Image (cartoon, rainbow, N blue to C red; front, top):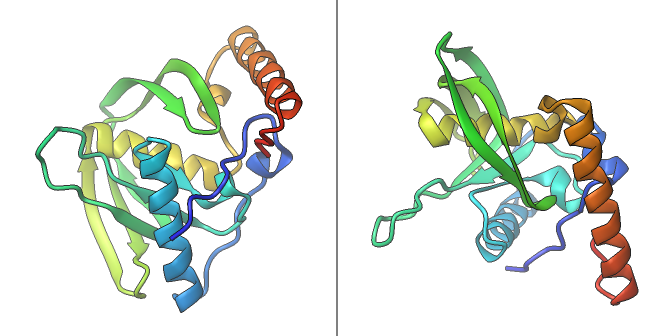
Length: 178
């Protein structure tokens, strides 16, 4: 397993729509392990393949955050929300591609999602709360959409300027962040 570098916004690859995966493979399973390792190392609760420069429809997540609880890592290939509730939740979202920036985003409270796991098995499950928010956030990445795209233009521009400055600082220090 390898911790992969995470792209930092603004990066054109983060705005591209990811391609569907036809089937599972050893390469996909290896990528899933790398993505989980990268997500846990960051640390984060979700990661989409475009965030590490791979434009495939694949996300990983684990929203178990309580100490002592059993982790529940999920790998989703071609995830799709097939139903969502009218009721909304507001969470303060962050993103590994937009470090140390957070904003409240409103999304459906409950979602039903279909996906294929890394072994090619089809799944359908209902998610609520933080899980529902995280899945929607990660699927947005597959559509080239970031959580800041839900914000007012001024706030979005302010965060983008901070990320441009961070990328310049990282480049100057020799830590290329994509």
